[in-house]
Image (cartoon, rainbow, N blue to C red; front, side, top):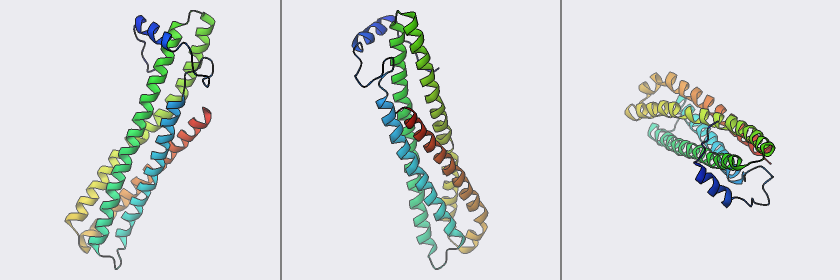
Length: 210
């Protein structure tokens, strides 16, 4: 379990400050609203990232048959999608960091309050609630971290493709790059599936806490 206990003086100080919990918080539970807000924001970032990476994959697929579209125009559109994918990935990663920061604050506070209890029954009950709540959250953040961990390799692969296309904007070079482009498209597809799985986990977590 990844949270820490402050010194006794800090425990007593925080306990005094939080002696009167908000009316909306169930007995023995901390206020989970800030965490749920961060998960909801992260869900929006995941949905936006999935849509953007899908758009980038579709743009790459156009290189297989440029048609009458000029290669420079096609390249410019690809760069636009590539840069938008970077922005979406950064936003998604930042949103996951915000989820983890909110969770650590809440669970640390909860642990602090439990340590102040003197009633052994009440203390045991709250420890059990804390453990169950933490395990539910730990499952979510594991999925989110796994997802963000898969983004950079795909972006690196995209960067190689964009760099090669910029340096070789001609039909012969394009024909020799089709296998690499297809591999990148497949990698993006796998990433989009993982992002969608993270979004599903986020929705389930929000529903379970309401």
